[in-house]
Image (tube, rainbow, N blue to C red; front, side, top):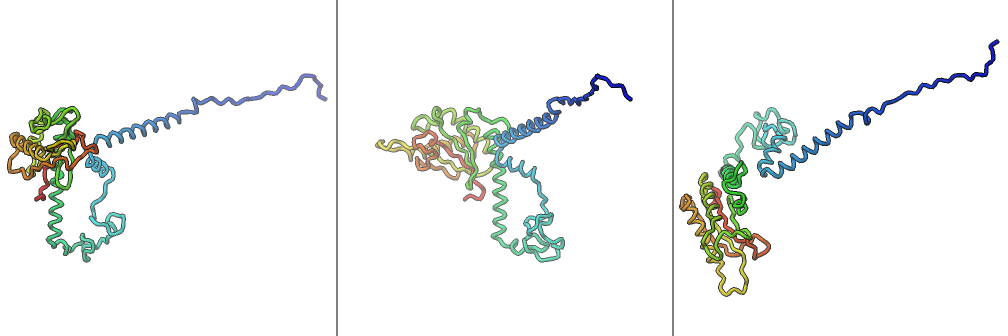
Length: 279
C-alpha cells in the first residue's frame, strides 16, 4: 500500500513564448520600398510629360512599345507576318506588299501623294530644328527668358508659324506707330539668324487689337500693313534674302486671338515658314 500524504501534487506548466518579431517582421519594409519606387516613377512620368514635346513623347512611346516591321499592312493576324502566308512572294499581291509590283504604284497621282508626304516629313524635320533653336528645347535659348515670353511657335498645314506678340507692360512697337522697340529688334535679329538654316519661303502677317468704336478714323488696316512691311524690311536688314518673301499682309483686327478684343495679346506679328508645296 502506498503511504497517504497531504501534500498536493506539483503541476508544471510550460508556456511557449513567441517574440514580437520586430513589428511583424521586415515585410513592411518591402512594401514601403515598392511604394516609394512607384511614387518616384510617377513623378518621373509627370516630369517627362511636362518637359518633352509631342514628338519626343511619341519617340519614347515607340521605344517602350517596339514592333517588328515585317509587313506594312496587316492581313488580320497579330503574329510576325500580320496574318499573311509565308508563300506571299508566290501569289498575287492582295494588300500592296506582295512579290508583284502593285498596279496602284504606277498611278501618277499616288506617286505625287507619296512625294508630297515625303516632302512634308522633310519640312517637319526642318521646322523642329528651327523651333528647338528659338525656344531652347535642345539646351540654351538664343534669347533671354524675358524676351522669350513674347514668342510662341506652332506647326500648321501652311508651315511653321513664329508668333511674336505684345505683353501688357511690354509692347513691340511704340504706341500706334511702326517704330520697333528694342525687344522686337532683338527677336527679329535672332529669328533672322535662325531661319537662315532653312530655305523655305516666308510670309509675314500683322494683327492688331480692336480699337474703340467711337474713334473717328480707324487706322487698323494701314497700321497693320505698315507693321508687316516694317518686319519684312528688318528681316532683310538682318540677312534674310528678299526673294524668300512671298507674302506681306496686314489683317487689322479681323483675326483676334484673345476673347477680349482690347487685349494686347491681339497685337502680334506672325512670321510663317511656308511648306515647300505651298504656292
